[in-house]
Length: 293
Image 1 (tube, one colour):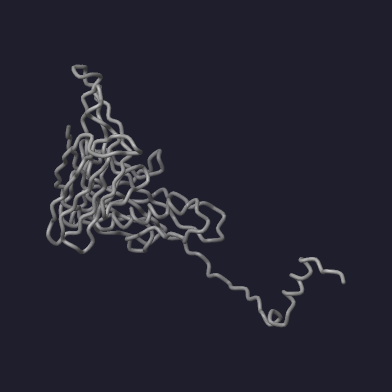
Image 2 (tube, rainbow, N blue to C red):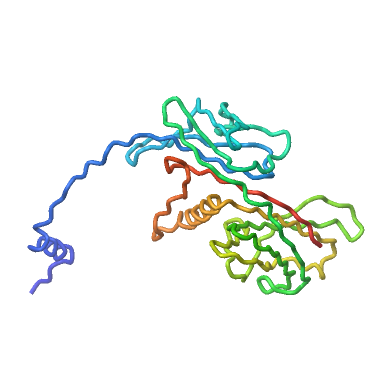
């Protein structure tokens, strides 16, 4: 008796009665109506404001999402307009160079985007409190990849009734020698931590957060530097950024988006939005630096 090739067996399987009742239906998707998409992230240490304004596109639209000219971006502190941006810069963003650092705007801060062809969109934020933290180095107290390493502990006192979300970056500064000239160069470190409630972001920074629970927070980081064995004077620069709740949610969604980008089995990730039309994001943060050695 001849055996049927697997391919013909497969065709026979598909032609079984259980499959003859299936109906293929064409679904007409509604036409896409382009909408205004605005995004802006402000930090107290910023020396420039850069807002992105574009329009959305449909799923079958072969054109790319287009940056829009002729938009007006306004930033309001309460009812008062403090910045107005109308020129599209060379980076395809609406820019404003500042004479110093931005600082923290008080009260409710509104990001508003308008364009002649679209409905105006907006979002409102409040700058979080300036990070209050202490830092302490325990020399050669831990290991990183099997090598002796300094351990650096950063502690944050609780702020009653306020959710606290922090991003922590650490750079190391080497002098040329024990008595040498200061190089003024800082090198970013790839850190490791076993602390609970700590999440490593792409790029080596760590995020810690409290959500709805008042508590003190701390994180201990292996720096990968062994100060005791070094022939240089070493100084750590700790940069802590306090995020608003909305900025925190965007960072979480963006980190998940980056992790899923090259994974064909990952669930689709939708970036967090807080604009009035649910497209785009406005987030604010405050940043403080300290040096320890």
